[in-house]
Length: 137
Image (cartoon, rainbow, N blue to C red):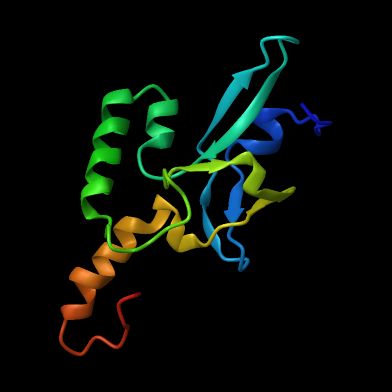
C-alpha cells in the first residue's frame, strides 16, 4: 500500500457534500466502504457510498434502504452510459480535494443521487402544458 492521508472517517468524510467534476453539487457521502489490510491490520476507505437508500441502511433501516435502492434501479434509465459499475459507489481513487466538500472525478449524471429528480422531470414535469423547463437528457 502507498502512503495515504490519515482521515477521521466520521469527521472528514461522512455527510460531506459531493461536487462532481464540473463543480456541481451531486449528493452527500452517506456511508463508507472500508477494508482491512490483512498484513498490517490497518483499516482504510475503499469507496464513498451515496444515493437512494444508502443513508437509511446506515442508520439501521435496512429494509427501507434496500427497498429504496430497488425502486431507484427501476426508474434509472439503463440506456444512459456511465463510468461507474455501481452508481452508488465512488471508488476512493476518484475522490479529489477533501475539505468542507469532496470533489469527485465523475459527473453528476453518473451517480444515483438524482435519478428520482431526473425521472420526475422527464416523465411528469415535461408533459405539463405550459411548462417552460426542459427534461434533462
